[in-house]
Image (cartoon, rainbow, N blue to C red; front, top):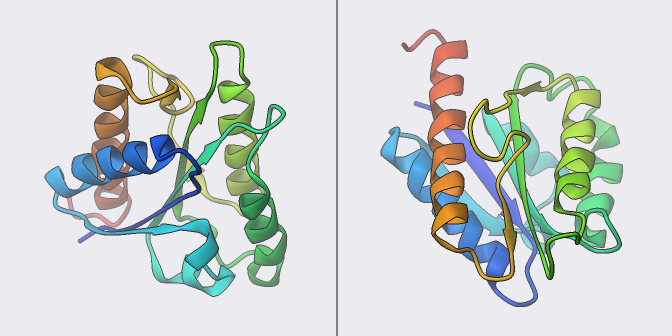
Length: 160
């Protein structure tokens, strides 16, 4: 069974809503899922899961400070996250708010850790994004992300 950790930061509730939608998709695929805030997450928590999905609002075109801190302190476990699945999503206040650059900055950290990142040929290619509260389109993309991540973990573990 895929073990998935979804970590989010939110001030307005929008990114947490997205995290819950990602959770719904992963559970539909049979994954064991834990959802928690970045403030609750310790670097050693990252070692316990097959997949890590990070959701951050966009601040000045990149991730929220809590994620930068978590990623910087995860250097203690460099090489130990290799082969795990990584994915990301983001919310912002407006269309040109930097969602895509935020998602990519999170994915870059996963790649440096040697993690597996799967793109999506449909919809939001790098990871789901929302402008303000997640609308129907964003909800579908979030659920799809959770489902695809859980499915990829199962495939990598030879469970499919």
